[in-house]
Length: 314
Image 1 (cartoon, rainbow, N blue to C red):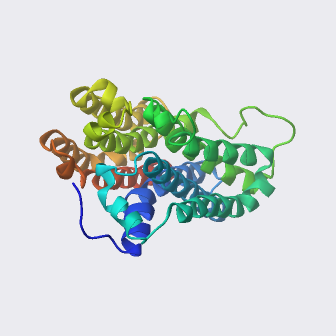
Image 2 (cartoon, rainbow, N blue to C red):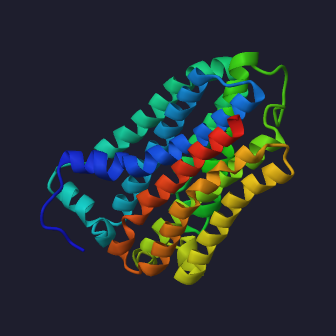
């Protein structure tokens, strides 16, 4: 829907780009889970965890701004982002500012990660470089992965497996120093770390699923083939439920087979919130009606992550 009034700079930079209700939960929840696992194994390092959160959040912001930059560069009259288009035309913000912000985010992420690189060695540097590349690959370049039905697996891998595993690894490294020699998969990245990452991978990917269902008609009109465009809204909602089921199944497995106590089931306390969001996802059909669902799904991920961290730590 077009807008005749351009948003303010605060509207653009905070509400549309920083988007704290979306970016903060997705950056914090995986680190919380990594902290819970690190406490359980005796490797909790709050300083390293805080830096991992900051670096991860900045990389995520760089990806968000990159996505907006390339979308507006390719679609100058994008009806999906009418407010942003109005801001550009009114001179409230310029594409050049977005380019500078992208560089600033990735540069600040490198500075935040520098102490982690000193303690964690080449693995942390390589991990950070791959994460930056992934955040760019989602929307940049001649073959943006998000526009070719590959955004969901990208989110699953990097927001879940990589974010939890990386935040756990830097805490182990902070106490032990960089591992000697070449290790393709460091000993610190255990089966427990992989399993603990899966709920975050599923729940954060679900946020993207909601976004893609919401924007399906706009994306189809622009020739972008997100997974929601490929699957259609019904199967995309089924994907959402399947990922949700995976998230809540992992604590059960850790309790019954993974050597953790009943307290690892604490994330199930967030299930009523998750059910409400799922019900609304099925009830709401229009773009505008689905807009509030993204931050609500983010709160589910954050609540699950905090409870999971506590259950792992106890």
